[in-house]
Length: 135
Image (cartoon, rainbow, N blue to C red):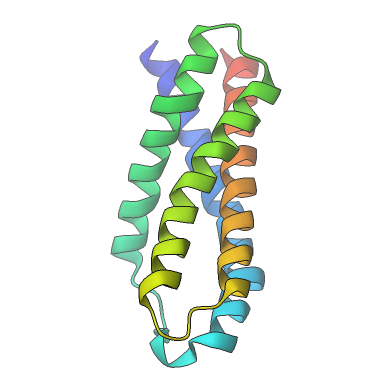
């Protein structure tokens, strides 16, 4: 079973990271640059980013992917459950920022919330599908 979890974690992590690189580059960064350019670093801090990814994927597996593997959950269930978790996580960040940060916009909230929701749903679904295919 340990091999199964390693495949699940590794595949979900890799898919999430690759997709988020594209999303951050072409959706999030341009949107945030328009509204809060002075708050953005020239280069991201990779340590904290890696910590977020590692921890977030563990939570995603705990609440969605492992239950899907141990039960007879459909990939549609995986996508919906993961998307809901993504909306909770990204929504917490975005709505809190909108409540307390100067310059935060509804456009930023909508862009990042939708991106995080879809990203989480797709990553979990692909991770579960790949794990089922290889185990």
